[in-house]
Length: 225
Image (cartoon, rainbow, N blue to C red; front, side):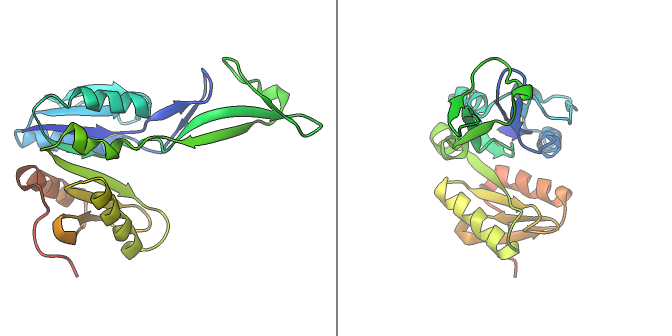
């Protein structure tokens, strides 16, 4: 089964020398790609150009992406291929850069343009605009594939993090959503079919579960207590 894994951060340009990006190393997605290869599945790894984890597992076809739009274009280009599973672990930018202004002494805002914004001229005001969600397009691009998304949550508790993961799964027509981050705590939560939830203690257990998803389209076992 041909698997597609996205990993690492996207970035959006502030000007020609500065970027807005996310904290993501690309390690988890790269290691998942290596695990799937060892299990006998051909893998295309779409990894952010800014990833600091640079390992390339033998046998993995790796393609780099830059912005959210670039990642979306590369995924759409794969839509016609026989992809059986997509594991969307990349940290895609939620916001792009809109307009930039400088506040003058009289309080008026003057648009700032140019290849490199001059820091010596003082503070800037930056407009951030929401970007289209790639995850919302995955089912259109890969209608018959197993689709798995990630939900990294920092605020709230485990229950609220899992609720948001379940919401992501339902709204984006995913087969499963992986929940982790400070709000969830140690390990990973898998929001699967029919609202079933499984707790996985570590990355090894997560990869085993994701391999099972390749074959079945859903997480194993009854809901965790």
